[in-house]
Amino acid sequence: MPAISIFNDVIGPVMRGPSSSHCAAALRIGRLARDLMDGDIADVLVEFDREGSLPTTRASQGSDMGLFGGLPGREADDERLPDSTLALADAGIDLRIETVDVGDPHPSTYRLTLRNAQEQRSVIAISTGGGMMQVIRLDDVPLTLDGGYAETLIWLAGDQRDAAERLATRIDADEVLIHQTDGGMLVQVQAATLVPDDALAGLRPSCRAHAARAGPLTATS
Image 1 (cartoon, rainbow, N blue to C red):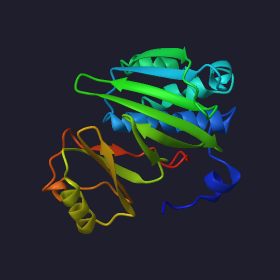
Image 2 (spheres, rainbow, N blue to C red):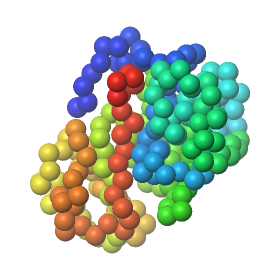
Image 3 (tube, rainbow, N blue to C red):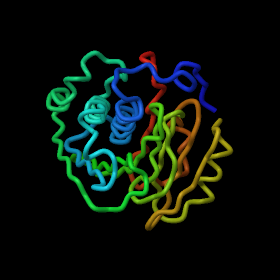
């Protein structure tokens, strides 16, 4: 399990205001999305459900500030967060925000579609309060990512369950989860460190393995 911090898990995250559930959670969602794209984001589409809380609160409660700061990789207490829109422009990230009618059950749901020259990823995440968040769907695959682990994600073509299960015996991991996808599977490894490349021998990834490390909420992450 990730280390528990009295500051982040009991008192509250070290962050810039006004709202941890909006600003700090949004920043962690942005940072995790950045990791999923290996730090290379050309453009991002952000969608908010019309009936949720974010269309009317995202500016005043700091959701925009946090998300726009997380995508370029800034920390939760970075003094430059109010200028996060400029950080996106400086990073060459094109941004589009839309309000949609999708009936998301959670009022603080973030839908991100991220692209670069090599790939596209879609992320659905929610703010769960106190600066915490969860990714609940990745590329239409239901899963849970909360940023507390160093997670390695490996997309596999076809049925490679035996090879994926052998991987679990070769590495020191808290959890190895196998998710079925259209035409293959997604292996999610939760551990203290990322899976080294040599441990992936015997697997046939359909694309490059990705890391998800939103990290703790303190500035020392």
